[in-house]
Image 1: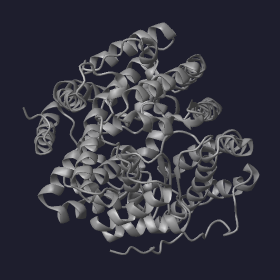
Image 2 (image 1 turned 180 degrees about the vertical axis):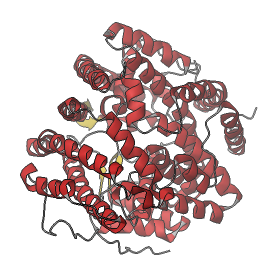
Image 3 (image 1 turned 30 degrees about the vertical axis):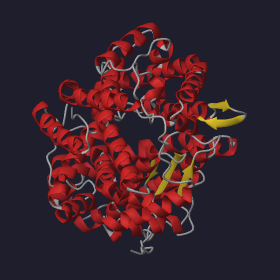
Length: 578
């Protein structure tokens, strides 16, 4: 099935000149002044004012996104880091008082009640929340935090190991951990552990600074600690810290046993007496690790075919991105770690960034980021930029569901049923193992931010206690106690986007529910998926999940129900059978 590029309309500018680019605050300020001082005389004038505000937000957002994209693609170029830092320190802080004034102007408008309250409800709720949280003294602090958080990527981007005379990024080196040669795996694992530990003090110092600044932001806004402030700032209107604790407990009770079952299954396949940390992704002797693609271009071309098998529309989204050069997929030295899909608010065609090295994990990441990209395309036609600022609980549902929908079509990457089966089992291992890890990181964050001023020793002690709580006990970590004690440092979310992690757990459960729906009726499930994503944030989270045909629910009973569904699928794959 051939996919073709689609036509996607860049937002037409009617407020800013077409040739305008963001370069200085002085160039931007007149547009903020216009909006701040404009008289709004009726409903039509209010709608035009919102349209102009939306256009300004889209132009600024796209510029800021490109600064971050360019810097993460090449962390070695000081000019790119400087451009990003300039925006964070010289432009963004000056916009914040204006956005506060504009939000107040909107909320005070007598014509507000004439707008479609159903469509505007989530947006206006967010605006009201932002007004309540705004403090002038936090503007410069938050600018400093943005710059400080990016240092994590700079530090991590320089991490490499040498193996047999060649230099590898840690993402590239991780590929060797799937190799059947157990001695090679151990060698690589030790090198990665040693390299990470070289920067443990630097990362602890950076993290302490971040914690101190974040606590100050919270106190300035009238909160005792950062956790409660951040819940409000993230707009978590649909769940509470107590719901998160229930999630932690349910994952421990209903998901951890599935992870243990999968780990024992791998141990049995490997034929080893003791499972070590370098065995958890490994293949048995005589079985070559899966290598689904060689290059970034091969990865993108085959993904187009997989997407076309699901829905031609999905493939057209990716073809459009390829045609516009909106992919940077391969790992290289000097590139920031991780992977993301970055929506570009004005042009509407997003950018996918990742560090592919030819593994099944990279294939899964591509499906994941491709799901995000489809979400960007589907929500782009919405009339206001604010309607496209959807929460991560629905954004990650889009990406994680795409992983599971696409599984049966991964034969594009593999020769034979056996290889496809192995790749699908690896995805199931990832789906299950990520939930206890999410619970670990989330519970750790709750501890971190409700214990301001803690020492590094206290942090380490509590990290290990929480980590042990969500561990199967199958893997023997002896000799790597120090590495394990600092293992949290590899989680970039802790440094760059605090408290943004439980969303993955909520969405992973949602994706399992979407997969269950897909197995029952593929057409209906994909219709529901596309409909929900096209709504952006014009419904509440619960409303969006309902539109998708599933429940926004992470209670113990629901997690048990989804866990049983997964267990049945694992039995079909030959896992858990005697």
